[in-house]
Image 1 (cartoon, rainbow, N blue to C red):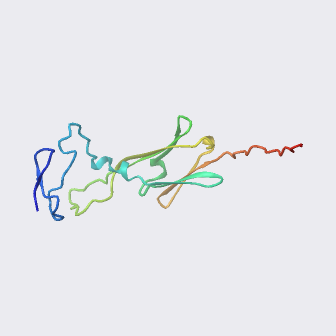
Image 2 (cartoon, rainbow, N blue to C red):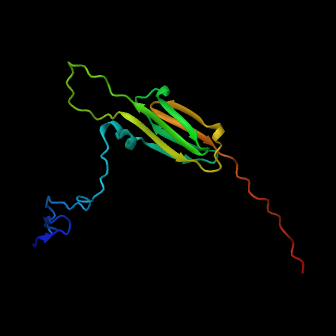
Image 3 (tube, one colour):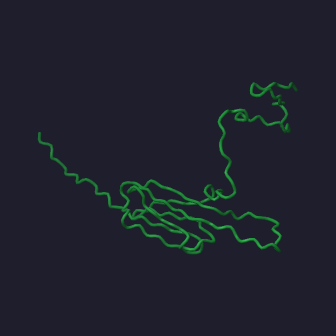
Length: 154
C-alpha cells in the first residue's frame, strides 16, 4: 500500500488502510475559525422541538425537562415568528460533593419558527405537562374559491 502525500499541510496518510488513525481534516489549516460550542450554551443545540400541522392548528411540542413554566418564554415576534426560549440553571455545588459524571446540560436555549400566513398569531396558547411544552397556533380556514360551472352553448 502506498502512502499518498496530502495537498493540505504536507501530512501523509494511508488512504488504503481502513484502520489508519490519520484522518484527513479538510478544514485543519483553513484561515477562518469556527467558535467551539461551550458546555454553557450546549443546550441551544439540544433543544428538541417537534412541529406538526393538523387541519385546525400548528402544534409545537418542546422538551423542557427540569424547567418550571416561569422559566420558559413563548413569544411571537415580527408578526409571524414563534420563539420558544428558556434557561436551565447549573446546580449549586457543595464542597463535600464529588461528581462522577455530568450529562445534564445547562444554559440558555431558544428555537425560532417562521409561521405560515394562515397562523392566527393572536390566539397562541401554551401549556406544560410532564416536561413537555405544547404550543398551539390555530389556523385560519383557507376558503376555497367558489367554482361556478359555465354552460357551453353551441
